[in-house]
Structure formats: C-alpha cells, structure tokens
Length: 319
Length: 221
Image (tube, rainbow over all chains, first blue to last red; front, side, top):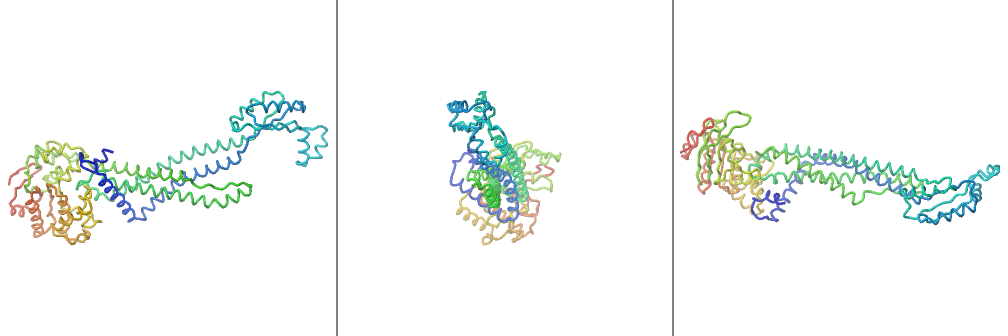
C-alpha cells in the first residue's frame, strides 16, 4: 500500500485519500469511456472471453445437475441377504434377530421362502412353471436396513464383510455398485473440468493481455507524452488495468448469461424427459455463489493480464 | 539551477559519443540558447535533463541533485519540475486543447476548479483563450506550438526546455514564440532553448551554448 500511495503523490508527502479516490475515479470512467468509443472492438473481445469462460462454467453446472440426479436415485441402501437352502425357517428367524442386534443395523425383515414364492407366483407370471417344480427353489431372504449413520457405501461394505462371516448366508447383495461407478465418473469429469478451467483461464489471460498490448501500441504516442509531462507509471498503468477489469467483468457476465441461456433452452426437454421417468428432477441454474466465482475469476484474470503487459511495456520504456 | 559536470553520453548502438565531456552551468532564472549543427548533440543534452536518457559518465545536477542517479520511481517528479516543448508539439490529437493543456495538472492530481483556472490562465498567456474546445488539428502550426507551450508552463515549472520550438515556423511566428519564452524568463523561469536559427538567436542577445560533434565549444554569451 505504501508504494502505491507514493506512486500518486510525491514521496514523503502525507497521503491524501480524497486525491487518491479522485484520481482513481478519473481513470475508472475514462477507461470505460474509451472502450465505449470503440464498441465493436470492445464487444468482440468481451464475446471471446464470454464464450471461453462459458465452456468450463457450463460443464460445471452440468456436473452439478448430474450429481443431483444421482443423489435422487441414491435413497436408502438396503442389503438383501440370501440364506443357504439348508437353513430352516426357525434358524432364519434366529439369524434375523441376531443381525438386528448388531448396532449397525436398524431393522431386518425376514421374507420366508413360502411368502416369497407366493409373491413371485402372483407378480411374475411364471405361476404354472413354478407349480411344475416340485420344490420351492427360493431361499429365505433377510432384508437389512442399516442405521442412518451407516447408510453410505464405505460403511455398508464393512457391514457386508461382517455379515458374510455367518455360515448360513450364501449371498449378500448390495445393488448400488453402478451408482458408485457413476459417482466415480462424475469425479473424473469434475477433475477434467478443473483442468479445462485452468487452460481456458490461461487463454482468457492471454486474450486480455494481447488486447491490452494492441491498445498500448495504438496509444504509444499518448503514453510517451504523458511520461514526458511527469506521469508516474501508476498513472499510466491505471486506465489500462481498468480496461482489463472491464473486459474481465463484462466477459464474466457474458459467460454467466450464455450458460443461463443454454440451461434455459435445455430446461423444457429435460422436464419432459424426467416426467417420462416420473422423476421430479428439473435443471438447477447457476447458483449465486458460482456466478460470483466466475465473475471474480474473470475480473482477476482481466486485471492480472493487463497488469503484466503494461508493467512490462513501461519497464522496457524507462531507462 | 542546472549544471553539467564532465558529462558524456554514448548510445549503445551508435558507438561514437553523442556528448563528450560537457561542462556548463545555467543559473536560476537564466535564459540561454543551445546551438549547433544537426547531430551535434543538442537533443541528447535536453534528453539527459528530462531523464529521457541517462548519461554514461559525469553528473547532471538539477537543483543540486544528481539526477543521473535518481531511482526510476522518482523520475516523474523530476520531469514535473521541467516544462518540455518540442518541434513537433507532441499534442494528443484526439483531445481538445483544454485537455492537452490540463494533462500535467491531471497527472499531479489537481482539483477540477484549480485545473480550469490554471488552464485558462496558461491559454490566456499564449493568446489562445477561447479555443479550449478545439482539436489541435484544427489549429495552425504556430497555434499548436503555443498549445505545447501552455502545457509546458501550466504546472508552473521552475525550468523550461524547448527543442527547436520554432523549427517549422516562419520568421514572424518564430519571433512571437521567442517573445513568449522571454516573458516566462522575466517572471523567473529558467529557460534553455535548442535552436539552429542563428539569425534570430543573435538578434535576441542571450547567452549561447554551442555544441559541435558532442563537445561544448562555447558556453558563454
């Protein structure tokens, strides 16, 4: 802060806040005015920045939405325990009680093989085929609902291993591995988007740097003259850094608008699709937090990009 | 006010010395002409004072400060003590006369009313009051040069440096411009003018500093 103050005022003089604000406001509005005088060039650059940033921003929103979809499917993880054929009903009841006493388990429901057969006969349409089988082919099944704190894939796995210790149990089924795979895929996608964000962020930095570099070339005479009459580097830099700020801010706003517009276009078809699956899912738009994130990112890139170029340029000029 | 002590300047590319062992002193409130053929080193000498270049050897003293050793970030404040005037005026062609003259005041952060008052005073001094809103391109060569002079004096610097200020003007306009410099000198401003208009200079009768091939051949008037 001390060095910045010195750039405006002669070193050693007391800091004058009013003067500081006055000088900044001057650069702030004059930079905006200059950009507004060449609106076509300005909007072209803003458009490039907006499109570049809308790609990662859009991907991130898509991933958030996919996560929401998978979250809806992810209800309760029940386990189905299939017992050995040799286990009789009394033993099965005892086992169900035993399992229920486990502190990881909230509730067990025993579906004995006779009931299961009746249900299957009723709903499957294989009734006559089943009758021709002399013997009930179905085993007793115990449905296990874990306590809520264990209702996650990792904890359930440990429960499964524990249950498999019982010799009566033939198979423990946990029908959620596809969900884990989807989550893993989303995780990879998120990583990918982070990488793309970094790359495209660098692209935005380069776009802004190059735009400011051209502006510096166009205004070379002006910079020389202001230097001659005693302008500090900070004074010369300020309008260019504000230009970078405007490019970043408007590019960021443009990116958020593009993403919102795209989501809006996808909203109708998505609702139609989710109603076919009788799901209540609908697209969620960019949150306030993520809009702020993208604006902050693009403004930062704008300021940093212009600062790098202007500082280099001025250091090259001065002896 | 200004003192050169054994100053030499060699440009990295050129090889030959642009200035060789130059010594002279310019007192507070003095007015002098810097003459010499093209390439004698007049512009280089002025650039050393305005810190557009730095000397290879020797000391350039301004107000008893060796400005050749000044840190980069202090350079602008040295330049604010000097009003620079150029043969090609160096005006901003997309800004009004007012904005051009106001530039040094904006840079040093003066308030609006103060800027208005001082710009009008400077333009009045050079006889351009009423043309504040014109663009430089719509003015004649002599008028443009006077805008440049107004810009150089608006900050009330203790010293004015002019590099061929009458180079493109006819004799009558040249004499008018020189009279302006005399007026500033009369109120105590130190003035150094580089010019090769020997007839005009000798008529005015001020001290002459003559450079030849980078060496100071005469330094008294």
